Amino acid sequence: MSQVGGHPTIHFSPDNSLLFKPTNAQEIEFYQALTTRPELTRLRWFTPEFLGTLRLEGGIPQDKEKKEVPADEPVVSDKADDSAEIGQHDVKSLALGEETSETRAQAVRSTESVVLTNLTQAFTHPSVLDVKLGTVLYDEHASPEKKARMEKAAQDTTSGSCGIRLVGFSNWDPSNQTSIMTDKAFGKALTPETLPSGIARFFPLKTSSSTSGLSSSLLLEVLQNIHLDLTTIHSILLETEARLVRR
Image (tube, rainbow, N blue to C red; front, side, top):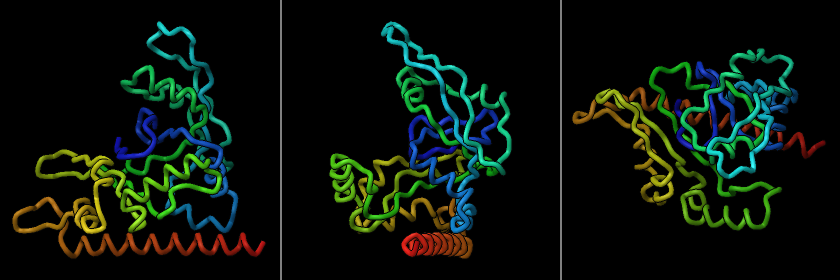
């Protein structure tokens, strides 16, 4: 598993091919729109495949003496017409791992989860970067309290000044044969002046003193491809917004 940020109660299927992410109505609507709205078709290339939603049916016992919070078996629903079937065995075998009663209770309360393909499964030693883009960290439906909280978060980090914040990342270190995790505290502590060096930490350059990085030619190709992807996504979103306005 290669989670470096995001929701703390994301679960994975036993073979690690699927992930189950607790969600809300807006996120479900977004993934459903990807499968039905022609203007969003090109965005599918940049997103994991959406296989539907999973619902944990059950309740949280009121008995405070209980250490485990049981939940009934999950139910998959809202599956897109062109998506693959999710085997009942895979759903029943949802790997919860070593969870506490508190995290399991949170999972039960968040009854809806999106079921997505795990994009990192195809890689033996994936390096994963979680980035928050934009200077506004809330949507139009946010409460006044959340708006104030998110505005302060942007003001206190590089989100407000640079429109980008490193949430967390993991790098595969071939010399030590291990993944090196960098948590959100690192990204929150970065300033506009130190942000470039923070980004370079995820994209290490091979030098005479370090063989764990990428060659300059390969690193340039990787960065150019990322830039191309981001500009393409931005273009698609602008076109989609223009179409919605014209309607």
